[in-house]
Length: 192
Length: 134
Image (cartoon, rainbow over all chains, first blue to last red; front, side):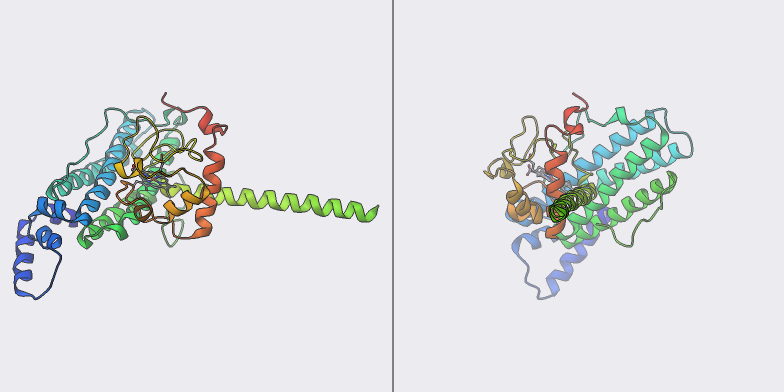
């Protein structure tokens, strides 16, 4: 949602511009350009915007891999309903994450990575529905950690917020997948 | 005689203790490695490069993996010291790296993680001997 707002909402940026115009804030040239929508300029001028694009692109790469992983799971013949429906729903979320990350990268003047022609998955270890769900849970847990590690390193706090929004979604996937294989859905009070 | 036996037993116990501590370290390390699982695997390249054979490898040197220029030019060789520095704050240790990740801030956690990477990522480990997908 917040990523969508960031990526798509010109009104939001226009209102910010108006706000910035009135207030006496001093922002770096790059930040002003970013907020005003002159994103390509921002990306060139600001090392921080460049770094943000790198972080977003790495996240995008991982999301595209997750989409492919769920595809392998869905086509494995090992998942029966309702687990199959979960996999398809979660895959859809990852696809949405990927779309909005790619749009945001473009808006910041970067070039979004595209999906690889081929991904490697440890398919020989996936022999049952539980194996597939555990593998998915492992990837989702990793995604939670990855976004947790991205939140504090974004230069732009709106991007940090957006990453946290995705983090919450991945954490729900992780909990549901744990539940589905009979593990405690929420193993601790904190994620790391 | 009895004293010698006692001393021997003490040495043996200490050795078992050290073994148990090392096992605990690598078990912790494996759990911490699950934080890397969105991007890395031991045996194959993903969003990040594979970790089999990491210790002793030049940073950014795996053929076929698309590293950042920053990583390729970092002139690092991965050992306990360089990994400790990189994993504490990747983007500060290698400015311009594409590993957009804040790092593992706890030094004990880093030590356990590196101990595990050394063991599980050694060429002789089970996962590294039969690499899938190739």
